[in-house]
Length: 286
Image 1 (tube, one colour):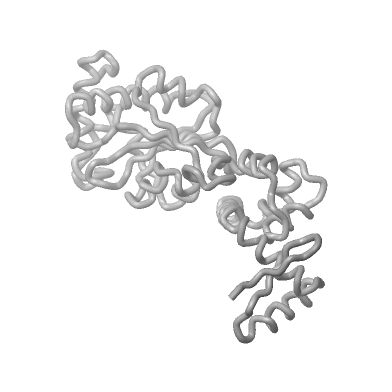
Image 2 (cartoon, rainbow, N blue to C red):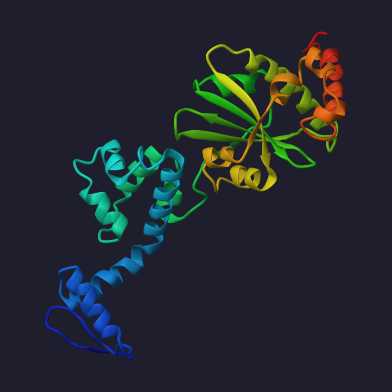
């Protein structure tokens, strides 16, 4: 039960505490070197910033998993975003100080997450863009900002959805969702997308200065990746390298495929069809 009484300067409340709660507050106040009133006020204030603190702590744990404790810490983050000391970040992450929007923007920019998610809980942590064409413009989009590595990922599922991760350094990535399915679960538009991707794959594989690779990713992780709820590099930890991206446009490599060494069931039938359609379109010559 809470009652209120008038005070000259500040409103005061009388709180009836459950048994044992007073002793817990007194112990916490002693450990934090402050009065019981200050301890109660501090804990009440923390409840109003708790969602933001929860997101910050989740981000800290995620970055530690991506980079390792030796490369990421509060002190390294503080230095990277221009703080003079780690002091303010230590207070913010402990819940002792409410972060400013400017500080959250700086953290979001360095960690490559959505600032609106970090500040307000809107949207998802990691940015995902969608591309609907896969010809020359798609190739230019992939290479224009000079990523370090381009990961072309097929979901290890019957439909075989495809996405791309552009990796710029040891933690900054962009995820690109596509409408491509590398399977026979497609219509005329899907077949055209496959032909366009085969031609783009050939050019990307041969592109100088940017490393590209194909992967197969478990369907569950793939879904999280294109939803923006997992760091791309953590999702890629569960993927396996596959030569499909290097081979599926190359007639010599296609000829070597057997049922026993297919990257996925139905691969040879798919790539033979795509190759014939690519020849007809003038993209690939035998």
